[in-house]
Image 1 (cartoon, helix red, strand yellow):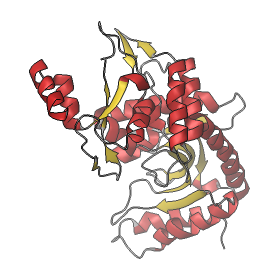
Image 2 (cartoon, helix red, strand yellow; image 1 turned 30 degrees about the vertical axis):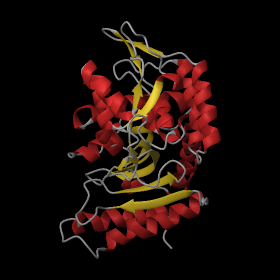
Image 3 (tube, one colour; image 1 turned 45 degrees about the horizontal axis):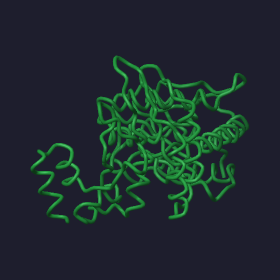
Amino acid sequence: MESLAETFKRFVELFVNERTQTFGGNLSIALIHQQAPEIISEIVNDDSYKVYGSVGTGAWAEIPWVAVLDKEISTTTQNGYYLVYLFDKTLNTIYLSLGVGYMQFEKEFGITEARTKIRAVSQHYAELISGSDTNFKLGLINLSAANNLGKGYEQGAVLSKAYDVDKLNDQELKTDLLMLLEYYKELKSIVGDSVLNIEIDADTGLFDDQVKNFQKVISAKTYKAVDEEIIDELLAQTQEFPRQVKEKLVRQIVRNKKIAELVKEKNKYICKLCGREPFIQKNGRPYAEADHIIPMGGSTKGEDTIKNLRCLCAQCHAVVTHGSEEEINKLIKQMA
């Protein structure tokens, strides 16, 4: 079998012409979908990682890639974070990147905010795990991308290294891959399975150290299977950590999304008021909402804790949040 460097070089040579042809049955597809993943899997030599590549689905992708994913974090490049080889649009450069999946940010925040959020998170993670002696560049890469997904790859780079396609060296590719894999493991010990669990101020990049420590406690447990005992243990620990406050034009309390998710999971996503079971979202997960019984901030100063959170369906949450006193009392009487 060819080496990884030889496979990448041959892919580029073929792809230059084949991407102008009809998609399907092309040799370049086989190189990225099959051959390169097989070679990388042998280098990584660990079944806990999934390796797969793509040059598009039904149509040519702007940025071809081959990714290495820790299965406990994610099995798709849309979510979590992973190692990935990215071919820039010109096909002159290949990047090896520890990157954050872009689509989860677009789904969570919308296209307008997604790039700002993913860049802030990626920058924060780079600072957490990088040392002064790192051989990898921190932050943004340049793929000459035009579409949202390609630009998301650029913004989502945590650590990366660029290679000139004409000068690819197989030993260098192997050494760098295994080295970046260690950074991947380090990030996992801090972040766990969810990059959306951490609140970053996109303007300053600041993050409260005490809250960060708690996030690490949560992450260490939640990238593995979460059972009832672990949920109860984590919820109990939320009492020991203060609310996070960040300062911009006004001081605002930042809600801990992971605590809210744990409350919903403990209640099986069933509404505490009407007993309605959750509907299933497009991503396959059940949907419910976490409601602060005593509202946070303002004169009420409710806490972001298990004691002050309950699982509600969207309808009941909307009523108790925005409904008149009469509507709220009507809802409560109906459920009594």
